[in-house]
Image (tube, rainbow, N blue to C red):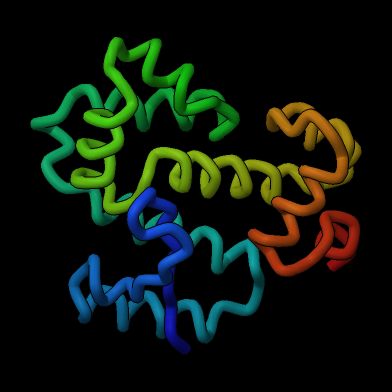
Length: 162
């Protein structure tokens, strides 16, 4: 299994990078092994989230990024990065550089992982898929379904039937 992430950057738009290019090769191999034996998508998502959290470097030294992570978790990932920048009184570009340096991915991608982890953990039937979508700041059902499918490879309805 080969894990890769897509970065969206003006000069590198739609470029796929291997995690080996960003993180320690041994750590990536360990995550790949865990992902290959994980029996459910829910567990795979938790493995990726734990890996990204473990890659947070110097969190103690960067209180702003620690606060950003706290705010992302506080709202279950359903926060616009622009709003996060405003709350933290920092402009987008320096924030993005600091966040990526400390966490290893963009704030948007990190928030997306937290958001979908929350959605998947909430698929217990207590709330409808529509309620979960709106709760997670998806403003229409088609956007929710498209994003969910990109993240899990399946529609929310099919996924929740597993």
